[in-house]
Image 1 (cartoon, one colour):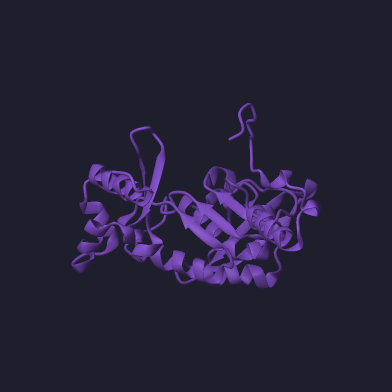
Image 2 (cartoon, one colour):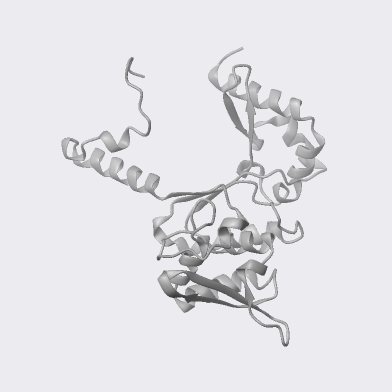
Length: 252
C-alpha cells in the first residue's frame, strides 16, 4: 500500500493498456475481462424475484430482482433448456413470460398436472424461485466467468440439491463458487473442491482446502466429506485452518 492513497476498488482500471508491451497488455486485458464476468447472486431474495422487472438484462441481478426481465429476453430454445434442467426435480412443463404495458413482465409456469392452470410468480414457492434463478445461470453465456452463490441450500429440498447443483455446474461455462452449511451438499463434492473459512486471532479471514487438512482427510476412510465436517467441532476446524495457513507461511 502507498501511504496516503486509499483505493476503493481494483488497480486494474487504472492501468494504461497502451503503455504496456503486447504480451503484458494481453494478460491485463484478459484479467480485466475475467473480472468483469464475475456475477454475484449472493443475496437471492424470493420477494425480489417475484417482481416483474422491466428491460432486457443480461443476468438476474444480485437479489434475483431482474429474473423476470432476464427470462423474457431469452429465446424459446433457452427457456426450454431451463425447463429441461428443472424437470427432473420439479413437475415443470413450461415457462411463459409476457411483457405488459410500460415493459413490466408477467412470469408464469405450467406444471405437468392435468387441468392445472398457469401459476403466476406470486404463487410460486420461495424454493422454486431460487431453483429457477440458479437454473438460469448457464444462460448467462460467455459473459460470465464466475458466479457467486451464498447459502445455496436455502429453501431447496436436500434430496435434490446435490444432483441439481451438479447439473447446473455441468451446463454452465462459468465457475460456480458456493457457500453452504449443508453437510448433504458438501458430501457431493471432492475434498479439493471444498474450502473451509475461519477467522484468526486478529479477525482476518483464513481459508484452507479440505484436501490440505490431513486430520479431516483421515476421516474420509469411513465417512463422506460433509459427515466429517458435521462431526468435527467447529473450533477444531478453525484451528486446523489457521494452522495450515501458518504452515504455508512458514510460521510457527
